[in-house]
Amino acid sequence: MQERKGPMAAKSQPSAPKSRSLDGVTNGRTTSQGQWGRAWEVDWFSLASVIFLLLFAPFIVYYFIMACDQYSCALTGPVVDIATGRARLSDIWAKTPPITMEAFQLYTFWVTFQVLLYTSLPDFCHKFLPGYVGGIQEGAVTPAGIVNKYQINGLQAWLVTHLLWFVTAHLLSWFSPTIIFDNWIPLLWCANILGYAASTFVMVKGYLFPTSARDCKFTGNFFYNYMMGIEFNPRIGEWFDFKLFFNGRPGIVAWTLINLSFAAKQRELHGHVTNAMVLVNVLQAIYVLDFFWNETWYLKTIDICHDHFGWYLGWGDCVWLPYLYTLQGLYLVYHPVELSTPHAVGILLLGLVGYYIFRVANHQKDLFRRTDGRCLIWGRKPKAIECSYTSADGQRHHSKLLVSGFWGVARHFNYVGDLMGSLAYCLACGGGHLLPYFYVIYMAILLTHRCLRDEHRCASKYGRDWERYTAAVPYRLLPGIF
Image (cartoon, rainbow, N blue to C red; front, side):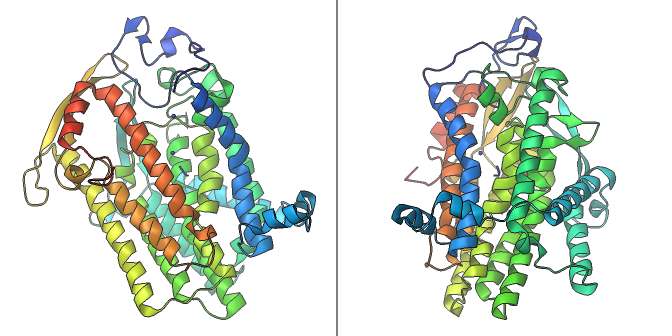
């Protein structure tokens, strides 16, 4: 959900001693570090948004999955039935499959297996895959000046998992490849249990035994602390990092397995796999593999560098991501779509061009960062805005903001590529129902919000240097529009 915040409200003081403070006062010393990560104080709009999401986000996920299970993915079906008296809420709930022992055992095995792959199997892919960066890598400096180390092995986990899936499901026939679809709603309850358990644990941990007390934030508001998180990088031991694990595993590793299970179910029910299902599987697999191939780069993104770990990431990565990001494949099980060749080619090109923009834009920034600007972007020496900021430990840092390549077109042009890819997934499902288009609508809202949230943070962090940057690159997302 993965992944992902005004003027009244509970303007209470942080409920932690000064030694835990990140902005304003740190051990009695004033800093000019600005607002990093989530807020210190909660305005009324942020609090209302938090409570709304806590109450309704789980219901939204249930509604979408239930609509497919009971109403063939017709989103208006349940509402019409209730409004006309043909059904009651209790009737719909009674038809919803409960949690089962099979689903519980399957989900427990899945999460345990991913934890073992994450913590116990050192990465070896970087030793034989040219260009892949894995193994022990450093993250960005935290607000308190800490640099965490990570075991980057997501690509390896994905490869091992899918190899075992192919062998056990298809060669040995130990279980049906439709097992995920067949247990889809019971698995939803298991995912919710893990999401709430992880979110509650890290909140308690943030109060009682934080990994880094200086990287914690307290607002004095329970709901905001629970949702947005207290700890910046909660960890157990040296290598188990909650944020990286839940952002990348188990949800994203499962994404392609879920789609493969949907494809197997479509073949079981309808006798063949449609080209629309193939397109969804291929395009989303490209996105997933790109994530793991560039997992080291991901350490420098907004999720890892700025978001604290709370319900927003914990529950979101366990439930929201695997259940709502895979709606296209689920929809195609109930409504198999066979696209004409021009339509299929057009969607494929849209997805690939979107991926190209997304990847090249991110590569340009990464190349610029790694070489400190000693590189070529679009055949020219890159231009940048020199800037500086102060971290919570009082240290002065210098940075550069790229204004060449795609980053000279718009300040978040990489999101344009992301949205093109999202639209391609949805278009593959035809125009029969609204449900598969939820993803692109959600991504448009999410990425626009991210633009605004990131820019508010950068304005606080860089001050006048940010004003110079926005003057050089005036558009946030779409040149001439926004």
